[in-house]
Image 1 (cartoon, rainbow, N blue to C red):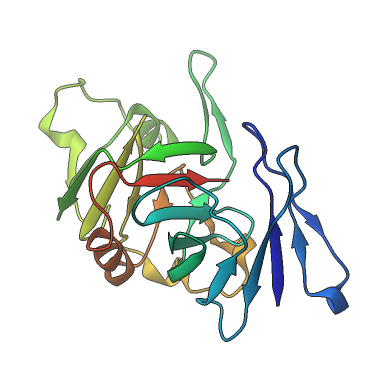
Image 2: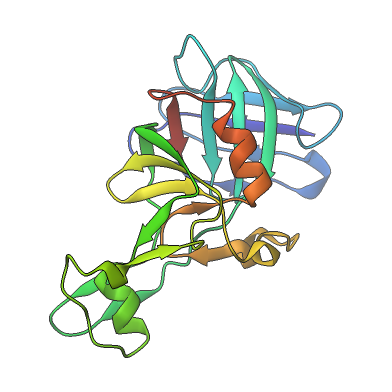
Length: 204
């Protein structure tokens, strides 16, 4: 199978090819990058790197809902992921859109057995009163699974307490989060050991 990618400033677009061509083309102003999957879905080789990096870098492919780790031109690891639903919540006073942001990020910090600080929308969705910002009730264990890799701006790649949602073979059905990138706990812990603080993360 051949996959072609091209870097586009701020925006990436997917144009499916005929099934016989077994290609996905990402068109943009900087030319095309070609991936070849010779053996399995984890064995991808590009004709040039997507991110300029001296070490490994992470690629979150939103069309496939899959997280890859690349070294230069070669993907050395991947796992299915859950990403934002795109759902909008509007209370009249506040508006939220639960999409996974696109762009180039870097790993800010990593944490084992993280606590999740529930934001206001968590309570609005459930019709519950919103506690004070500093309330201990907002701190919840287990929601983010066993591992969190924080990218800043409230976005993280993390584990989950609902791994079954990530095992559906249809990537569209893996749009299950409020914006973060979810992995199984095993995959999130593996990823944590493959990256360091400062590792680039391309989400597109």
